Amino acid sequence: TAIMLNNASFMGRDSVFYDSITNPRTEYGGRNQNSNLFFSVQEKDLSKAKIIDYFVYWHGYTVILKPLLMFFNITEIRHINGIVQLILLLGALYLVYKRLGIKFVLAFLGAIFFINPVSMAMSLQFSSVYYIMLLSIIVLFGLKNPDWRLFLWIGIFTAFLDLLTAPLLTLAIPLVFYCSLNHGGVRDDFRNFAKANLAWGIGYSLMWLLKWVIVCIFTEKKIVKFVIDSIIYRMRGDGYSETNIRTFDYITVLKVNFSELNFEASYFAILFILLLILISNFKKNIVFKKDYRMLFLIIISLYPFVWYFIFINHSVIHSFITYR
Image (cartoon, rainbow, N blue to C red; front, side):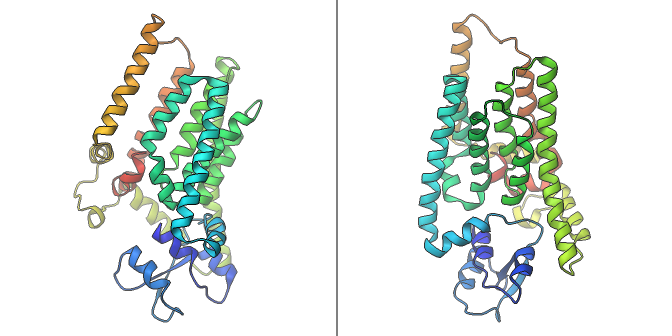
């Protein structure tokens, strides 16, 4: 959040267009991000600041955050955030109930519990993917015949607004509902499932690439090597200086992320959800429903573990985000 506020409140250099592409923020010595933000709003010019161009991301959130900061402070913005997110969540729950019934509502609420809506309201950084997820679900259920092309736009908006927090939220949860609504037959449903995944991936990756191309064209920055090095670092980089963890491997990723759930409320919620599933199934004298769409849900449930395997560094350093 401090980085986002620092970017949004940057006082500007000579060119607004150049700043909008390079997304600068200020740093003051070796201080942390909260201190940098504090000093940035105290200074009247940039003479004492070190300017950091944060051009790898789009920082699309500034389109919303900058106007809000003209009228509200951070506490008020967090209150607005919480209210708007609650309204969207209630709207999404209503639509889920109307189309799919109470079981899906309970399952969705279980997922929301682990996402932690309170932290989503408090943290501007987490909010982007949460908004995209909720709005995607509302649009998905608002369409009479939802199409896989919707996921292209979901991927684009995720790359535009998110600071690489938990982007899989915007793919996996809407995809669960999309698969649950699809009834075109085995072949068509599998084809649409594959197309939705591919559309999200194309939208997400090409939107990122577009930002880097724009920076190369309109600035003198040579970012190709920087971007490649950044990607490699997020995949396999040694983040000891950031975490004090010496071993960065897949087992460490799993341990660190699951440790984020190490509190009694999580265990109670897991047991409660499992109990609901068992009661629901045994009440109908069945153990598993023979439905090929269950395979979609199993595949989707593996996505976080694939992310952990590819982006080991990111998943260890930012486990407080990626466990979601």
